[in-house]
Figure (spheres, chains in turn brown, purple):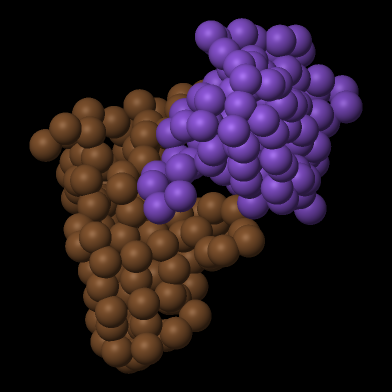
Length: 113
Length: 109
């Protein structure tokens, strides 16, 4: 693994189903983030984690949950998907939460029908 | 509230210079980032300004005026590969990035 990876690359999901988007980084970064990106809108922060074992809510957390059991992994779970969660999801990491550039994964394109 | 304003789309000619402006209002300020995002790809870091003034990095330069809540990204000697969206993102008092919708830059030969 080099950098930050996400899986799956894309997914079509029926409404009401549970889905976990995976994110793994090998840079030993402390901070990790989940964003969604919709056409015409800026990236919106869903959840973040400043260090392993801690998480926080971003701008649009409803319908999503995260965990940070270790430094490398930061999965995002949709408990019961709805069509409004159709979006491109980006995971990002940074050495720490302040003043550092964020490195982005390649994204997951999710369609909820 | 927090707000980022940047033009939706700009067009420029290969070899020319273009300036992409960004105005912002945030709760506190801990610097401003510019990212480049090619269509269908992830954003990649271009620059970071925390003090007023111009930061130059090769063909790209970024300027910040904290008192005016204003930044710009200057791209020189434009190449076709510079066709992308450019995202302005100030960092607020909680060290969260507040993202603009981005400026789509179209380069014509």
